[in-house]
Image (tube, rainbow, N blue to C red):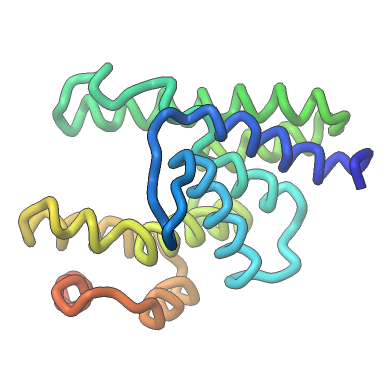
Length: 195
């Protein structure tokens, strides 16, 4: 098991994300925030698309690797700054992931595909990129949307939800409808879907 490149990579991704200084409580335990996020990504991928290709499974696990190393407030706190931050993060995640995968003995072809996925290339055209994006959106809805909705005004939440839905496949949108959310959040989702 220990000489299996996939398990080695997952262990190294988790070890890296264990350094996240930000903590999140879940089910009575405290976790490094990005470690918990990474595990949720893997669990959601396995549930939503069992038997996914190895490169997608790797990309899901390291989708936010080292995210805390580039704080949001290191860019202007406007939409342009947000997009610059997100773009820089994707490159950061891909660079770290590439190094970990090389250390685990992965071939250049797999490393290139994982980086391709982390950079969100060909969204809506590449089926694996779409699958990863679907899982990202589903994890957001299941674990983070209620908290996000509580912190922002309804119009902003509806706008974010509409943008999120545009990135999702019909299968993922149907799956999102099965996720339990608060009554308020459910109403905002319905409003977003109606527009």
